[in-house]
Image 1: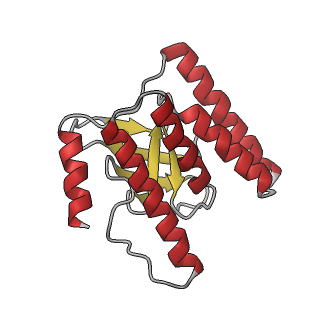
Image 2: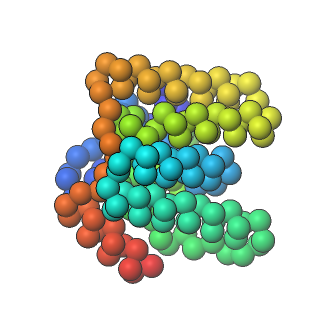
Length: 174
């Protein structure tokens, strides 16, 4: 399903996720901003904890800052991880381009807020006149996530326990 081979490690829990349970998005993708706005809204609506809402707000801020800097020729700080919850190693299976938490983020497919966010991503693809292959790929992702959640259930996204402090410490350092 994924065009990436992914190893996403949560250093607090020690749990690893692969492309079979996460979706990778690159910070350079302009469609990420409206998706994160919808994801943030959905997190609030489904009752995600305050730490999760704060974390998503910071992701959204970083994405907006990244695109503003790129559009205005301002150097982008690439020393700060974009995804503060996971250590990511990903390889694009077609181009062999590598990605990590400094240029990408992952969503767990069991994340209850993800379907609404993917729907927003799809609408943005259509509005931006993306090619048919990309739109079909997003439709496949939506179908995959929906089937997975129907079969295995979904979970309200959260940042818990030691993850909260690690994320706060990471934000404070940068």
